[in-house]
Image (cartoon, rainbow, N blue to C red; front, side, top):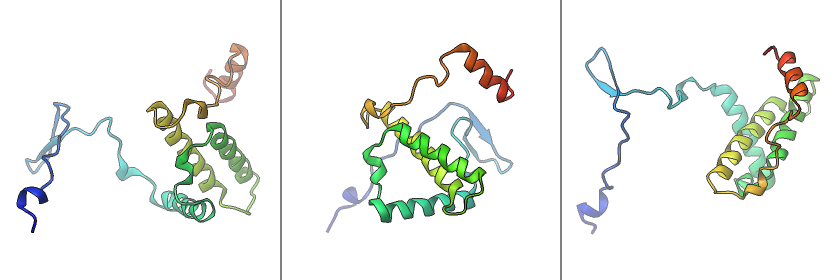
Length: 145
């Protein structure tokens, strides 16, 4: 028989910004700016990416990608899938595949930054266009000039 003390979890630490939002009911909470808005996520797109996760788990093993892969593999694959989508290829779900690769790129880059994966996996250049002329050309092409 376990005692009440063993069953209860330790008191959680509640982070506090010091700022409050008050609701019409009188209820108050800490503000949510800077914390993200998961309620705005696109559920259909997330489910399509989840199907890519499932297929990958069946093919390579559950969470195989978490073991670490070079960032360039995710980047290159995402771009290839975007090109195939743009060319209207129907052999795979290319948009969800591209999104999956971009999500893994973000996650892996974060894990490298936190020291959870080796720095060697960050094999992307610091700047893709180190030449100012090329950087300015790309800004112009993207409408940022």
